[in-house]
Length: 396
Ligand code: AMP
Image (cartoon, rainbow, N blue to C red; front, side, top):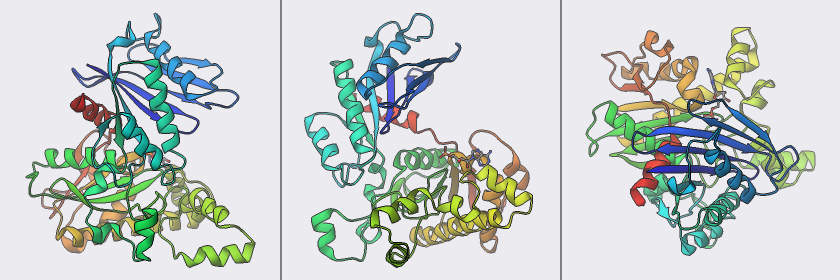
């Protein structure tokens, strides 16, 4: 079966067509600037030339049709007929407390995605538009919703409840949900498999470190805590997000600078984090270059980040009553050997030891701990699209 994986943002649409016989990607691509001037489709078929087409995309319906046309194109295509697509797996941000697993989309599921618009105001509307566009373009082909929040629904109340007035939870669903769930699910499962751990008796910490970053504590394959909260702003400092701060700062600076709460939240989401501390960039490659060249603020940004990652790992070792494996993933986790070293150094007192040579190598799933390390440290490249495709196939 061939499965189309879609990830719709407010003005973008990423896709992969995966052949589940061998889990090979047949084609992948991206529509950008949907609903804006200069919309462009970039289509990369496996084994063929990349194809870029600038063409108007007034809405996601048009974008979905362009993707299907590209997939079936005689020159750039990889399938002959849309009927070859057995199902579409959609990345959907938020299911609130409704779903802890992926689900085949029907009217009820669409209603839940709609009910969760307030919890995911940027993503859920776009995700639903993508689903409805596929319903029209591929009538009869099942759509599956794979939720970013689902993997974290196994958190116990002590991990997901905030210590705020209880009616906020009852009336407004204010609680911690967590994100990057598809990645945490994929990487924790692979870490258990790779390290030969007993799935029913395993303690794994997954560090998804990218432009957005989150950490999760996974006990026997189930998430018991994660660093993002009601929104992806909580937890680690990130490329442009502040992560945890004293909420009183919002009122303090809003009063000083005459800003609204919305303006303050925009700053905390888009103008904070590594970008703000370094004063240079949100990209960890630039921060490393800056630190190497003696830039004190780039160094400070990396130190703040690694210290916070280490503090979360430490707290999750407590939450799990120990740890068997720590897995690094995503853009920074997979590529930044300096960050991994700066984080793991905090745990030398526990006998957790990094193999510096392995840490500096590149590659796929691998150990970067020494053979006598008390805990296995792994690098596992994440593959959210494959996880979405697998879950979609299972359901259809
Ligand atoms: P992601 O959000 O997972 O796509 O990660 C994107 C981030 O990964 C970029 O903003 C970079 O900061 C970081 N990154 C990618 N490649 C490298 C690298 N070779 N070294 C350090 N950081 C990297």
